[in-house]
Structures are given as C-alpha cells and as structure tokens.
Image 1 (tube, rainbow, N blue to C red):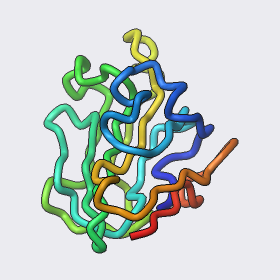
Image 2: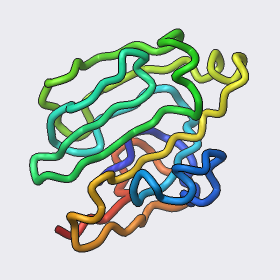
Image 3: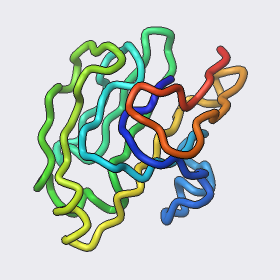
Length: 147
C-alpha cells in the first residue's frame, strides 16, 4: 500500500488520539501531511466517504479495508476546507486524487493535522507491516500487507 499524501511518517502510538494510538481501529501508521492533496493508496472502491469529508474508507480489490482519517477531531469542521474528488461507491486506482484539504485552515481552527492511515480488517489478514519511515511522498510504499 502506498502513501495517500506527502509528509512525515509517525508511529501509530505517537498519534494524539487514543483510539488510533492504541490500535483499536486497526494497524497502520500516522502521517504529518506537508500538503493537502490526498490520493488513493490502493486500487479499490470508496466504501465510506463521510459527509464532512474528513475520513475515507476504501476496500481494495483484494479485500483490504483502508481508513484514511484526515486530521484529528476534524469532523468538527463540518467539511469546511475539504474538497472531494470522489464519491462513495466510486472505483479508484492508486494515485487517483481523493480529497484536497486546506491544512492551514485546519490548523487555524485549532485541529491537529496528524493523519492516521490504518487497515481496519487487520484480523482478516496474515500480517500488516508498516514499512514507511521518515519523509514520504504520495505513492511511496508505506505498508506491506500479507493476505
């Protein structure tokens, strides 16, 4: 699986959200985005696109369920600063634009831009190995999935 955004990879445990940090929502990592352009990390179907556009769920063509949660508590922004390029039910290919976000507006509103990227059906897979580290660009491999 490739990175949905350019930024700095951080360990899931470093996220300022207990549910993500403790792995309650799945195995993965966090990214501190350096730009607001988010892309599909896998080929698959957009199974969830929250009306507030802050979170996107994609089920890959091989059945891996990916959740990209743009920022923390950003649901409170009610979609302000977010622009979707896809809708729920769309089939996407890795690298296809998903959502653009005005990161400065998110920060100015007092919200964290840390973006959890997790595999929500980790238990259905043999292994999920975060392999991305340091600075990544969108499209760099960040998670190796063995299913």
